[in-house]
Length: 483
Picture: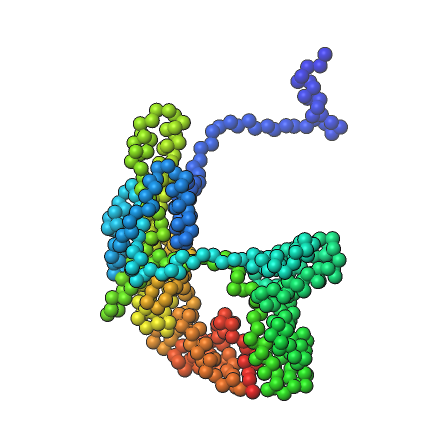
């Protein structure tokens, strides 16, 4: 008989002799401190509510009211006038705002209900979302054909048309996918290309322009040659050289270009995403003498009020499952009210700070729009930069100069003027004004535009001018030249 110890010894012996084994069975406890960040459901909800737009918050709050029994269905109450807005001030206390509006505790949230007679009322708030591009094209397809086969091919083609109106699949790819002939797909595509908006279903820019010109009976042989053979040449060549190649005078080429400019290179761009109404939460009104009032309007939110009967029931029920359910729902209701209150206080504080910092814009217009970063506003409001970023996302401000997205007022790119620092928006406006007044027979180069801005007291490099001109959608000097 071989003992277990002998078996182990022989297992580790080989032709090279005995092998040594070193095994460490150290079982001492090792204590160390580690930090982990855990987001509670309430904190996650608070972050999500901060970044919601007015319409998104309305939908979210209404859904919570429907799902949580602790909320009273108090949405259909008599409208009331909102609390008078405050003048902007550097120091705005969130606690003071809660106290002023009765939001000192998580018992309720009263959205401001405005009378229809108030001057801030607008029917634009009740605009509904329009049809999408697919819906619009499918409706036309159903009216044009009763053939199931044609409808099936047409629906597949429409499904491959992008937001600008271009077909992003070849006839061969569609034929292979559906198991039909290319001739049949081409026939249905020709039908789709007759739909509104004119130019939809084109496979490239040249075909898009040709469809629009044909529909208006303006597709002359000269335009045919220009669109199909010379359109891309304008990116690298001057109009004079292209006119020479086509055997045209520069005046004839310019006339042809004038016709092409009446076409829409993105025929379906007006559809894009489904439209949503803009609800400006921040309202700025002039008081005269360079002072402005800042107020919040939240008429779109339901009244959030915790039912006292359910609150008492949650503390008196004895059954464990029911008690757990009620306590969870009560906690959710209190969390929603607290988070909406915090969102409104933060939005109010940030809006007051922005109005104070951009007061010259409200007084004098775009030329006085000053550079502003989210970090500057965050420092004044004593919140984090990420909080400012979230609260301005998708929110709008109604002002005497129009309705603006809050992000419009932030511009980090600046240029030194002779007497002050100006924003990139102001420079772009000056640049567009200079180009609009230029002599089209001798348009300014980017260097000349830079020198023109320099004479107005704004120092901008040629490269920066080129960048701003591209962002404004203004073509290069050669493309702007006219006889």
